[in-house]
Structure formats: C-alpha cells, structure tokens
Image 1 (cartoon, rainbow, N blue to C red):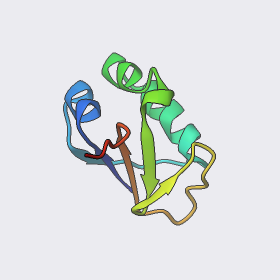
Image 2 (cartoon, helix red, strand yellow):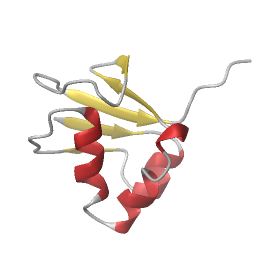
Image 3 (cartoon, rainbow, N blue to C red):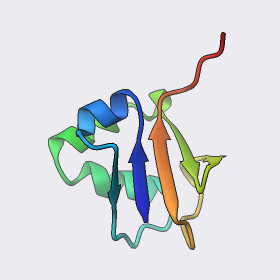
Length: 81
C-alpha cells in the first residue's frame, strides 16, 4: 500500500510517500509498525491527537480496517480561512 505524509509529518520522516508491505489490520496497527522502524517515525507519530488520517482518500479513524486499502495518508488537522 502507498503511505503518504504531508506537512510536518513529511518533514519529520523525510519522505513524501513510500510503498509499505504490511499485515496491519487497522490504521493504529500500521502506526505502531511504522513507529517501531526508526526514531524519525516514532517522533512523527508521537502525538496522534495532532494527526489526521485518510484511507483511500476518506477521512478515517485509528481503528479503521486496512483490508483492501490502497492508500493511507497522514497529515496535521486542516485549518480554514
């Protein structure tokens, strides 16, 4: 699956996107798996309250199943104006 990172998440991880092979059942499982990789991932995912997630371009929660998902995106909350 493709994992996309936006704004400061991208800056902390150092990549805009990557292809990830995973058996994660939920978004939270994927976050746990990514966080265990390296310190930069752990830092990016250290405060989930400061992050939003989309699965296949639909806003999702941390308990959203990943079965059949092609894309997961992580980004800070959007602000309007």
